[in-house]
Length: 569
Image 1: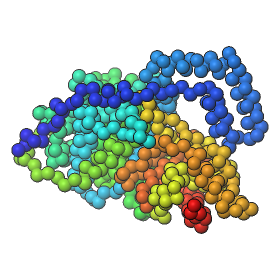
Image 2: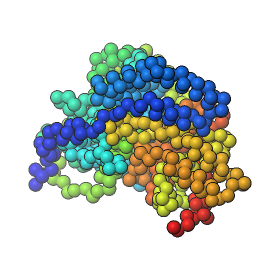
Image 3: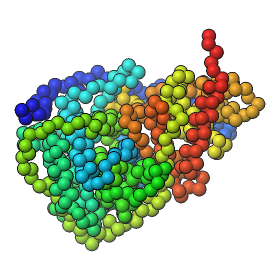
Image 4: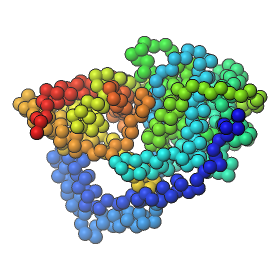
């Protein structure tokens, strides 16, 4: 009864998504006084007394009636009355589209999935096919607006980002990039892009009756792609997307002057998502394997490995390598992590399902290979991009660790938020390494507001500083340290954005400042996955050292709490 496999695209409930969106509150403009008070509070633990008193003078000047502060505040309030969300547009432009460093390492996060147990091309393609089917299954929920609405602290969240992650792509521009989304058009795309050996293919994933292809059908199509791209392409055109945005914008305009190139680029940009069939990574010992895969997800390992097997401007790229390592990399402009993670959770669950018995196969057309005409100028751009990328790859230091001693169940048993507990461990690790606190950026969700994106939690607080200073101070009693720890974790606001995945994965990203760390964590019940990144070009930072201090901080904090149990009232 093949008719039962028809998609439910006809059962769309019109306006369901819109009705939900309109019910969300608008993002308020915080009162000026509150903004300034919070600004001072955030600065207090990280600057000197002298700088603090100077800042207070500046704030006093800024706050005067009829002064700059008041005028700017009024401007913001006017903007809030005119816009659906006064901040989102600015955020998108400033944080992403006008940011000129390469998206690779500097902006796009990677996600490492648990290693799969296939060891050959058959297993790789079978898994990739299942993964594609899982992603299309998630797409059906987006298309039919049947995605369950998410809640945080009992409040419904804005679901807009889910509608931005498929069939979308970033386009480089000379001063500012843009994002195109083809899902909204009259003829939404029905194909994905598959990359193998640096060659790009357009693969239609829906049959003529509108139903998605089955895993078996997708597998057969992937085999055709594989067999027609056995030789590595000499010119890895995808490497252009790793370059500095201004350089890439120039190369892009030059590239699409040619009609064939333009058609190929458009096909990639329009596709629902990209699947990268990677060559196996060089074999390494188990303890550094995870860190290697994290780097692989972030940048592809350099021009000799898989970096040319990507189109980094594509919002969503699933990566499946021949050796069982897999994950994804996503372009950050259209969405924060949580919608990507919930899509990923869905896909991973889907790949575990047993396959249904299928009816006989219909012959399918050959997937279309995307052609590129490479002029000497484009070849030069590719060479330049390779050099720049390889420098970046050499510079990134990533360490992934699985902390096995405990997971989120321990802080919960102590009535402490797991996120706050981990953040305090980060503060303690940093303080022990450098003898001071530093500015810390933790993202928090603003999705309880219409079109809300991200806010920042300044995890370094006056309370966190008091705790880390007391922790190794022998003149302080343990009881006082426990109190300071509890106070510090309570001061930590609880609407953090790094929604833990159900899947045992770890997200990773590069540091956002030259002398900083990029730290990502996924707390599971009994263990915590950490990814720590730093730049080798900075003599002061070291990812493995930070990871070591982090483990010690977590253990010391657990010991402190266990040896000083709260008295039963």
